[in-house]
Image (cartoon, rainbow, N blue to C red; front, side):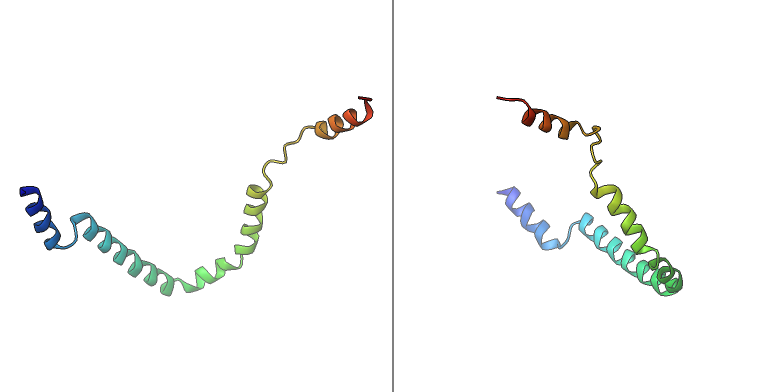
Length: 86
């Protein structure tokens, strides 16, 4: 019974301390980001020119999957299996 009363009193207090800290941090981050963007717009827009080049390099590195160089071993095995009579 006492747990229910304590839960109801906590619910009526509003947000928890961690939630309030998170909201304050989010507000601060939004304000700081807006100020940095407005004050350094020329620098940010200057870096956007390099974004396609960086994206191409990152896609090349992460999307090839290592190529798994085995000196053509996979092709050789499949050709050997075709050449041998069953």
